[in-house]
Image 1 (cartoon, rainbow, N blue to C red):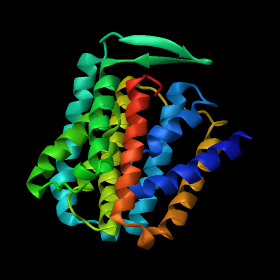
Image 2: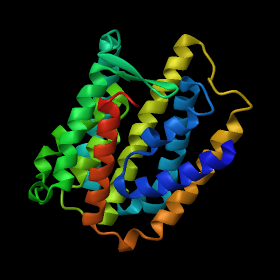
Image 3: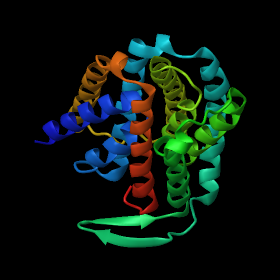
Image 4: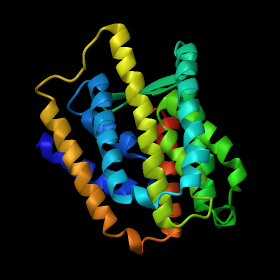
Length: 262
């Protein structure tokens, strides 16, 4: 049953996030947390996310807008390291609130609340007709990349802000999906290098045990399947649909973060 649940979730979420450009890690991690300790669930999700990014590159990477990749992606990678360093300084900040939800405990922290508010604001730009038609001039891509990368290193939610900016640049659906895939891959490389360095410095091994890898591989293969299914509909999807999907996911994750559920 656990393999079926992980596979079903990975197929659905991976296919969905092919268009939105974010959400796989955020939505898949709680599924892994049903079967693994939280730290193992995070590591498992990172593996699936990284493998999925590579797979998406092979399928849609050629559609990427190279200018967007350079102007947005490179600042994002640099800012991600700054965000990770900043996290070390504020990690001792106390909780704002804590309350039970069934068998789980929701915890509201300053960073979750900040990210939740930020994503909520961006969701309005995708969902409200008066704001949806606004476009971000490419001269603001540097700012967008810095914000996205910084919060990616700070909280791991860089994809949402990235999609919010890129959806406003006037690119086609194919270019949006391809550009998101390439930038996500570059950020994943930076994350993996950071994790590897942390393990070496701490002289620790991977938190995943031999009995947990089969479930992780199931998630990877199912995520690949979701991308393949989503790609079949890529030419039929308009940017308006992408904006609606992005806005709804932003809204959902904003509420989940702001209330401490994730």
